[in-house]
Image 1 (spheres, rainbow, N blue to C red):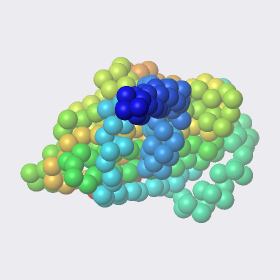
Image 2: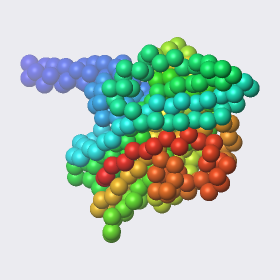
Image 3: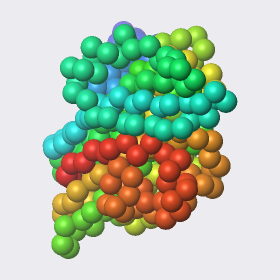
Image 4: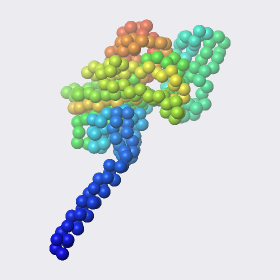
Length: 295
């Protein structure tokens, strides 16, 4: 009898262990992103709430591990809304483009009710709506800081070439922002079966990185129809404090990748970020205003 009393609990323990592990093996992750990072529903919801679906869909494993294990202590943000009017001649070539900052109320009232193309005499006028958002994050018990930039179009521009999304930072005396990692993503028609996306990895041929800024040239997909989201995620080691400026420059004429990348980071540049020394190339972009905050 003593022998049986010893074996029975041991047998049940083994069965429980095998069954428990078998169930766990059968469980599937709630979400797997484009880099193969597996997430539970709780983890996915947490990161989407912190950032957005685009950034989570492209997040590398290293950034995911950090974000999921750290809580945001300080978040700063600025969002601006813009209406852009572009004039085209009879050949379809853009003649002039004017980007005007508007209020959030104006944007919400007009974004779904604005005709994209209208004609006036021998020229065509295109009106597009978009918003630019900059967020900075500092975390509890960590020297890591994160910058995210989003440009969201509610109506798609006719000219689809190399647009540029970028952030520039200026550090206070004695402060620094180093060990930079970054990536970008473009997502078109997010609510459609015709959805298409592109990830831009660090050090790729579309990116520019210096000690005070990161920029990525994104060639707008030809099949963009209804909505277009462009995102930039930057993470690094922050000592002290500084200021961050961000911009998105839309190419109103066809430009090459090399032309789109021929900039430096300067407060005197387009949107307070991108300086093109070549005036012709500078004129290819819409000159939309930028956003800025601290970190």
